[in-house]
Figure 1 (cartoon, helix red, strand yellow):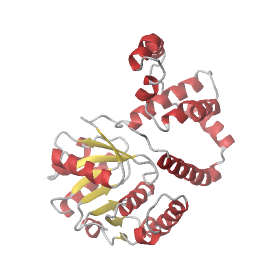
Figure 2: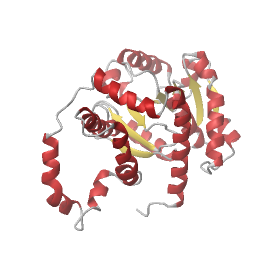
Figure 3: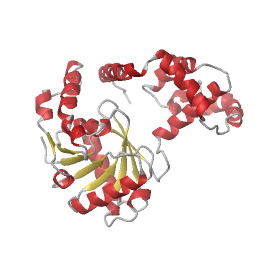
Figure 4: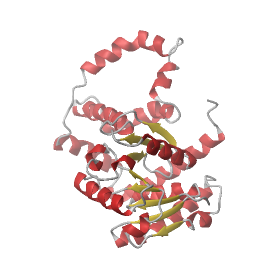
Length: 313
């Protein structure tokens, strides 16, 4: 246990994940959610995930010791009292996020950092009008946060550089792999990259080139296997004898031509319906939760493997 105190505001899947991340790091964690039922479910969900992490050998302490660092707060004021770092995980609506940040800014200690887990809203959109805007930024995790170590830090134009650095160090101490943006961009890095791939996946289906399951086959057994331990630039750097410059000389014209065939396409009802029908044929709605649990176990197994096979870089 160390002296760092964190507050998790919003106890849905992302909030519970952050609570586990922070508690594993030895931070004290206060969790609050406006919905009493959601809040009361937190201890059971966290206990189950910590037990599975222990079975996979992914935590160094007894689950009970980690759980003991997490408490349920009676109110938002109670949650942020004494916090060094506040992690907001509310609905993806601009109005609600503006209101939540205004309330947190009024209640949290003056020295606390206020971070949002938003998936795509640049922080300038919901912090411009609050007095403490210099201490606000986005700390967007990959989902689920407790199993994927990435966090993207996106400052607003007025975010104090010391706040950005404090957050970076706090996340690194919590075992996160941090990507720091130089300036705002909608969707940050992860979702812009994912969005580009999804756009082409939907386009291939819309144009009758391939069925949805075949797109997933290509990702699972091709690109995804490489991308599970290296990024796109390193991937192509290793795909030509002379590195990335050699790759671009060989294949740059091909990829430039492909871009001209990729104008934006609307995900209309018919297209989404076709893809959804294909997914529901493979996975009925009532089986999604079980498949999510399977996904999490696979991510734990991958994390265990990567720990045993560290990157020499």
